[in-house]
Image (tube, rainbow over all chains, first blue to last red):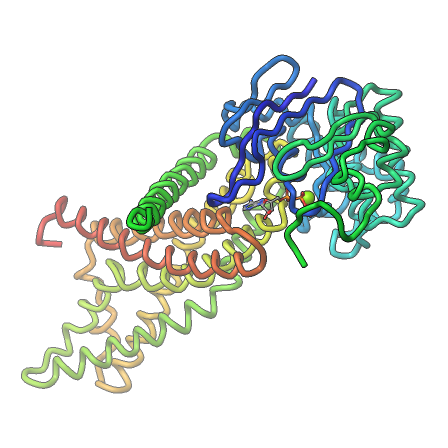
Length: 250
Length: 268
Ligand SMILES: Nc1ncnc2c1ncn2[C@@H]1O[C@H](COP(=O)(O)OP(=O)(O)OP(=O)(O)O)[C@@H](O)[C@H]1O
Ligand SMILES: [Mg+2]
């Protein structure tokens, strides 16, 4: 179980998260939605210690983790994996080496065994032909799938997906949706998914949290969000250009 | 409120400075502890240190040779011009040149060259990994970025700076000797005279070289790890690394020279 309580976070004096409360239960698929720049990526980076709160608390399975030292996050990052927004594969390593790295570092596997395991996992996501290529030689969508494979190598209990389907074609996007749903249903994996993809949001979410102006504006099942009478929420899920929502931009 | 603004800004600057100093200290301690202990414990990339040594050596060999060679020529030429003005002191030039070369010019100039080349390379590489979130991804993979990225470069740089320093000194010495012979008719047997070079000089010079080699990747790695934003941030980090590591070379030169004077006295 994951919980953020009253989290505040500012960058250079500019507040991004203001008194944010959010919880996610075990085995749940929670979507975090909101406009660009609202702080979705920032929110999930706090859960694995990549960013630190200015104020507030973060709890993981009944343990407060926000003030833990970097060393203590080692064990947490074994259990909580993350797929970054930019599909950040290490560009000095081949695809197989990328996927093998967590196995070697977290899993303490030998190099050859880790590489063999990495190849098997890449085979599962249809990247068998590309295992020895460097990230620069792959397409965006391949990189994204590689990054997902890398995040799943250690069979994590929780996976944080930052826009996993952005930039994928509809077929691969739906495959990723199916993968997330299956992880939750079959293996009890908790998934927190940041997404703009309305199709996947309403297809696979157990609950949806809508971020607005630094906090959670609305949170509920897809049906509840769809039926919300909040005009801001309605504007977002209907994708209307004008409405009550105040967003920076043009 | 308005009157407090500038103070707040100064305060924030000062806090940022303290923060950066602490961070540099953490990177330095992390690198040294990593090089002594933790790097050897965890799984490593095979051949990484050798690869980094090759990068540093290969990138800098010609650069160091050309620079040190010309500096050797200019130094000997100017010294000979001066020493022949009143009385003929040409016989002393070679011995004094060797002493100066071993004690200071060789290590410091080589390190200055490496600070620009190696420092910029390290900062650009680590900085671009930082701004593309690869450093965060490394942390998620159970890797300590300093252990993984800075330590192998540190070890490679310490070794290669010492090696390149010896190479650079040899080139400068040879170039100086040729200049002395062709321009001022100094007999090479007179010029290549090591009687002024004491073991203490060699010790100090090599200690300096090793210290420079240690400082450059630490400063450059620190700058890279602090890169912010996008490619602009990488550029800023690279510039900061060149300035910072050159500056570190000067400070270390001063410090080790001062320590040498304290230990061996003015007879050095
Ligand atoms: N490391 C950082 N330093 C400074 N500001 C940051 C940093 N990370 C995020 N921000 C700022 O925090 C705000 C929220 O960023 P975040 O990346 O969480 O947005 P997002 O909701 O994920 O948007 P998108 O959908 O475009 O990915 C942005 O205004 C961004 O400029
Ligand atoms: Mg984001």
